[in-house]
Image 1 (cartoon, rainbow, N blue to C red):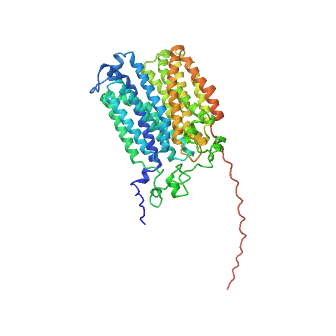
Image 2: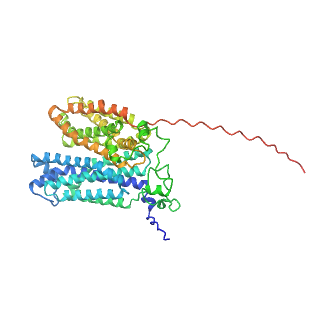
Image 3: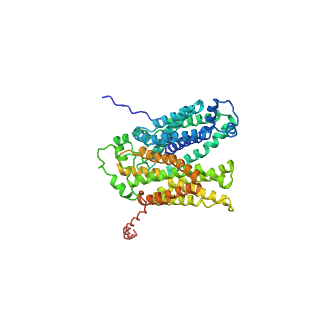
Amino acid sequence: MEMTRQPPRPHLIGFRSSKFYASFTACFAVFTYTTLYGLVTPMIPFMLKMIDEGIFLPDNTQGGLIFYSTHGVTADVPRDVQILAASYLVSCMTASPILGYLGDQAKHRRTPMLIGTLGLLTATFLFLFASNYWMLAFARMLQGASGATIWMLSLILIADTYPERIQGLQTGTMMMFHDTGMQTGGLIGGSLYSKYGYKGPFTYSLLMIATTSILRILLIERRNNPIHWFDVSQDSTPRVSEADSGIESVAHKSQSSTGYRSQSPTTHKSQSSDDVKGSGDDVGAEPRTHRILSKLLHPRLFCSMLQTFTIGFSIASMQLVIPAHLGDEFGFDTTQAAMAFMALCIPSIIASPIAGFLYDKDGPRFLCSAAILVCGLSAILMVLPSGARPNGSAVFIVLLSVFGFSNALAYSPMFPEISRAVKSLVGEKEETKGLSYGLACGSWCLGYLVGPLICSFLYTAIGFRWVCVVIASIMVLISAPLILIFSGYTKKKQPRRPKEPRPPAPEPVAYINIAV
């Protein structure tokens, strides 16, 4: 009887399948996607201006952004910019749950991640060679869908690689790369544009995409790969043990009774009554997606999605109205407003890993409710500083920093929390990471889309004060109490194990020396 040959072990498998390499690949992928988003955003008005004047691919056009700002803007450009931003968010919002579900069905995460990178590459070329408005719109929508793919699959890869007891910290670290890319993309694009012309930022984009593609091609997942590849007897890298890995491998289950999946039994509370109810096998034969969609109004899942929506709503609204308020109230010019705006962005980069660590340590209930409460209070206090008062601008910037820090502190834990909420409704045996993260990202994109629409109208009609009142009311009166009441588990200290009684000391033995 002919024996089937097992596939040979790849080269450098110890490094290519390590936790560090998987985490670095995921974080760099998210950083690439957000950097390219931030890089293109300030150039879109200039692209629209060039299309309007029939100028395509200018060679070494120095100071293009200055040209745009000093030669006037047609009335349609601001409207077109808003439509393009909305098309990006709608694409990302609708694609996130779908792509998350497809990511759950994929045997390996690498293939859909590469497809998302290919979409990002196509969008970059469309931006580079755009000669009319529909090409820009299609590029923006494709960028949103491919960005959602990269975001979803990177989160899933982190969840596959690390055990559940430290996923908050790892997700927070990824969110730090996410926020860093968002904030530095525009600075990188502007500096490259001023030095190398129109093609400079896009050349940088292609290099970033090529690098992240190579990293993903070299990545080897432990999920659904032959178990003998990771055998400690054949590799100097220690095999991931059952206690240190959160991976559930179908292939491994068929070959060994000890899989890679584990959930630490001593680090969680009873994970609330919701976890206990949904973890059994009585989920029935109804398709998983139908079960989840039919339970979107379950308190724990709905409140987590509401908080994600609230955070997207508040941060997008503040990003829109803060620069205008700084100019109107304190007389800041564009450069001063941009520097003050960093007070909103930099604290969020610092807060993300801290939030993940605290989530792993104490759970989401008190952390997220307190953070969203502080965020709402800082929003309402922003109406007090004014240009007529001494140090009014300094006080406003401090409050803005508190707002940005607490906003990020409440945001990062929502990804693992929504994942746990979905798992509690569907059951432990089903793969739900992608769909869970898709719901989280979709909720955030919806808030990020709706917030500027409402708050721009409020700011124009009745002023900055009522923008802060609306944001604070949603956070303090709705989101914080619901999270405090309905969010998931809170950890408690494990009781100390009683000391085992020491065995009685052996009786002394007498030795008699007999002289011969």
